[in-house]
Every structure is written in C-alpha cells, then in structure tokens.
Amino acid sequence: MKDKVLKILKDSMKILILVLTVCVVYKLNMISICICFVGAVIFSVFFQKEENIRIRYRNRFHDLVLYMEQMVYSFKKQPKIRMALSDAQKVSSHRMKEIIEEVIVNIDSKMTDKIYEESLGIMKKEYDCKRLRSLHEFLIKIEKHGGAYEDHLNILMEDIKEWTDRISLFIKNVDRVKRNVIISIFSTLITCGFMAYLIPKEYSYTGHPVYQVCSTLMILFMLLSCWFVYKKVNFDWIQERQGLSENMIIKYYLLVEKADKNHHTLSVVEKLSYKKAKRRLENEIKKEFPDWIRDVAVNLQNDTVQSAIESSYEKLPFVLKRPVRKLLVDFEKYPVGIEPYDNFLKEFDLDEMKSSVKMFYSMNELGKEQSGKQIYSIIDRNNKMIRQAEEMKNNDRIGAATMFTAVPMGVGVVKIMVDMILMIVVFTSSVSNVIGGQI
Image (cartoon, rainbow, N blue to C red; front, side, top):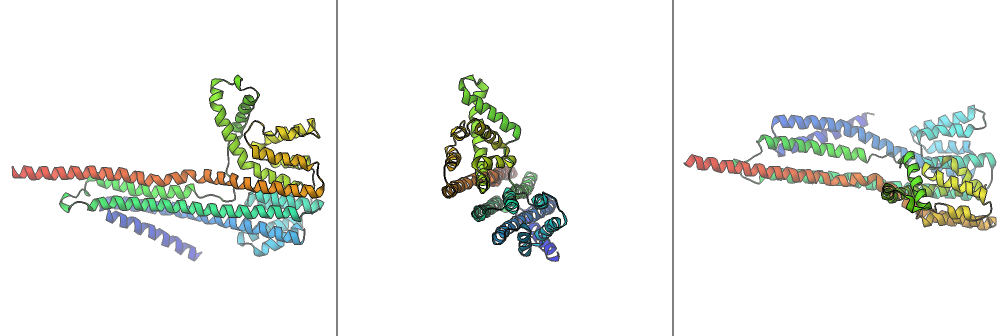
C-alpha cells in the first residue's frame, strides 16, 4: 500500500513539474501559471483514477485467463469441478483466490440440483465473459452426464489461447495509440513554444493578454486531450462491447426481410435505409456468429446437430436469435431435408457463414468418426472467422481514439496562426512608434 501511494505521488509530481516547465518555456505570467497548475492537479487526480482502472482491468484479464487454463488442465486429469477449482485456487491471485473459495464453500455447503450452476454463477458475476460461461457450461454437462470430453476441451482450450493472444495484441495496439497521442501533444507543445523565440526581445508578444489566454487554454486542452484518450481506451478486456440495440436489430431485420420478399414494395425512405440496415446487420452477425458455431460444436459432444443448435439458443446474442429461431422452425417443417440449412441467412451476403451451417447438415449423414473430422473442419473454418470478427470489434473500439491523435496538431496550427497574427501586430505597432517618434 505504501509503495502504491509513493508511486502515485511520484507520477503526480512528474505531471506538475512537466506542466510548470511548459509554462516557464511559454513565458506565462503568474496568473496563467496558477491556472495551469490547478488544471494539472485536477488532471493528475483523474489520470491516477484511470490508471488504477487500467491496472485493475489488466489484472482481471490475466487472472481469468490463468483460471480458465488451469480449470481445463485439471479437468482433463480428473473430470471433477470441485477438484479443478482447488487446483485453480492454488495458482490464482489474491482476489481470484477469494472468489474461488466462495464458490467451493457454496458447492460444499449446499445440496441442490443446480448446485454447480448456482456456485459457478458467483464467478460469472465477477468475471462476466462468454468464454468463461461456455467453459463452465461444458464442465457442468460432463460432470452431470459424463461422456467423451477430451477433444471438446481441446477446442475450448485452443479458443481460449487464441483469444488471449488477440487481446494481448489489442492491449499493445491500445498502448501504441496512447503513445502516439503523447508524442502528438509534445510535438505540438514544442513547435508552438518555439514560436516565442523566433523574434528579438524588443518585438516580443508573449506579454500580450491574447497570447497568455491562448497559451493557457492550449496547455489545459492538451491535458484534457490526454485524459480523454486514456479514458476512451481504458477497456475492460473481458467484457463484450454492446452492439446495436434490440429495437434497432428488429427494425433492420424487418426491412431486410421485406426487401428480400419484394424489393419493389419498399418506399423511397426504406430503399435509402435498406443498404445501411443490411450492412449493419451483416457486421453484427459476423461478430457474433463464430462464437455461436463454437458453442454448437461443443454441444455436439453428446447431442445431435438439431439438439445442439436448440441447446445454444437460450444464450444466443440477440442479433442471431431471429435467424436461429427460423432455423429451428424449419427443422420441424423439413426434418430430414437440407432446406433449413439452405434458408439460413438467405437475405444476407454471408456465404462463408452459410457454408459453415451447411456442413452441419452433412454430419447427420456421417458416422461418428467422420462426424468428428467434420467438427474439426468446422472449427478450423470458425477460428478464421473468430479472428476476423474480433479484429472488427477491436477496430471499432479503438477507431475514435486513433482519430483523436490528430486533434492536438490541429489545435497547434490554430495556436501558431494566433501567434503569427500577434507577431505582426506587435511588430507593426513597434515600427509605427519608431516612425512617430522620429516625426
């Protein structure tokens, strides 16, 4: 605790000293320096708050990854959730140890039909991640019903590893954006500060009220920019980003389905909105589809294709509920035909996803050994889609912050223009005074 306080004090002092140095270089008066100092103090408080959140989010991510990996390894050796939890507790951090302890106590003290669901729900509240949910659901299924589980645990483990690698890369990209913003701010401050030293002292304009106000505002704006970007990219790495609202998804689906039936019946406004609606839905489906395919593949451990799809429906993201519900309805209409798979997402240009679903159809006609090979073929294809989907999500999350790196330079251009105008005004005034004195 003492080390943490000392680090906060050191970081705050660095910020204050840096701001005071800039104020001196910019030749600001005492009033402007005091305003910038107060701004630096406020910035330091909020910056430390964001830094603490960043550390907590990163620790949560690493704790969760370590927990999931240990649970898989332990469950492979002995398919008992209680024993796997004990092993995971031994390698976990302080906070995770406490939560696992609470889960274990819950399992040991209660005797209900849903003891594992209720107990592991404690972990879900603290670490709400869909990969954690998928892992827990599969472990509970094996604990209760048994069956071959090694291959499907390998699927989950491979997915966890690839997800960890992607998030780790995303963290590096976020750090790079922060670094670029800092470089942009310092470059702008140095360039604008250099303007005050371009002309002789007798023509100096740094004492002008306009210069003092503009310089003070620019320094405060740079502090605000830095804090805004840090806050904007302070992601909870294990939490899924919310996409379109449910009402918007329903509205877009109705429009796309209407256009698919008869495009000519669309009104002028609907025709203008149709392409946007279709594109937005396709993007949302691309982001969620791979996770659904993974869950279905895991369910196939004990279920038929139709049962596996039906079991996945309850926890589906909202954007997939409508097409999967149609697929289930078509199963009743065409129990043995390819029509349900052929009609899936027919309104959209998502050929790769349609092809993945059609591969499930062929599994109904294959033996167990061939079905296993087909599952891995689906998983290989799905891993590629997962990478693409999560890259889309990550690009969406970091896009606005990346664009913000250009804002400090834009402010710097305005500041330089103001300085040049002041330079001309002061120089012209000095020349006029000299001419007037000679007369």
